[in-house]
Image 1 (tube, one colour):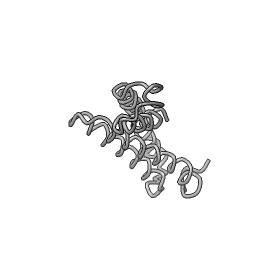
Image 2 (cartoon, rainbow, N blue to C red; image 1 turned 135 degrees about the horizontal axis):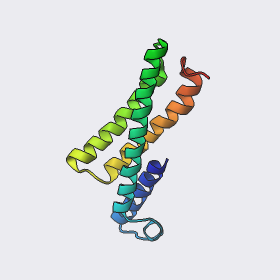
Image 3 (cartoon, one colour; image 1 turned 90 degrees about the vertical axis):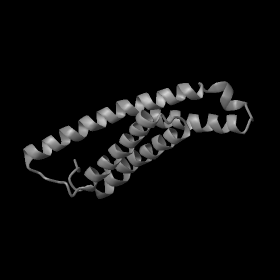
Length: 129
């Protein structure tokens, strides 16, 4: 959520600076560089947490012999992991900053919302509690 909010703030502030209509966002938001650092730090923390969650989930699946790889929630979680992996890879190897990474954060957050709300509630077979 923090990366999503910082990404939105980055996009709004960038658009304001690009249009040379400095005003509301410029005076209230942190700098673009600071927003980018917040975004990448929170994405890295979330990526590590998601990686740990996926690994422990797969270990648990193997131990309980409840192989639910057919569950769409597993596939959507791996898709979210891939979105954030690509984002961190693009940032780390090409040095990209700014709106492209903000866009990845927003897309990743939308996937997370879809995973938790739509897939988790309506389509998940093995994750019903």
